[in-house]
Image (cartoon, rainbow, N blue to C red; front, side, top):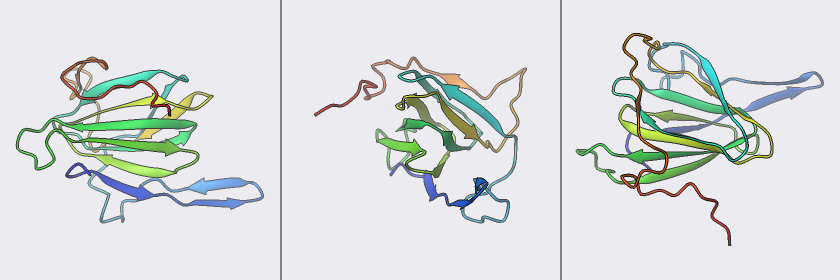
Length: 152
């Protein structure tokens, strides 16, 4: 596992009306750092949204609808896990919270038959004038990862 990345199994609490699932609590000492904002983003089946990273922000991803393959790449030169790639299959069949530290490149691909929905709870507010958002082409040869489906 890439250094600094954390995974928390989420628990759905069902009843006859539906279900509730807590994603992140301020009293969760292992995961909660600070609150910036909450937002959602989606991807249609087969769409890749990658690569990006933040210099200051920690992301807390949960896939609340559909299935996503979330991929991380450790490009931090002084990290003991430099060059490591991690894949996480997240969503309806695997409800988890994925904490992504600053400077770790990440992206996702919708692998379900319907639009996938990611909720992110980053530690900082989005700054419209100076965004902490840095991007690399999803098919860049700088990153040793192929988004194609791996059959067989």
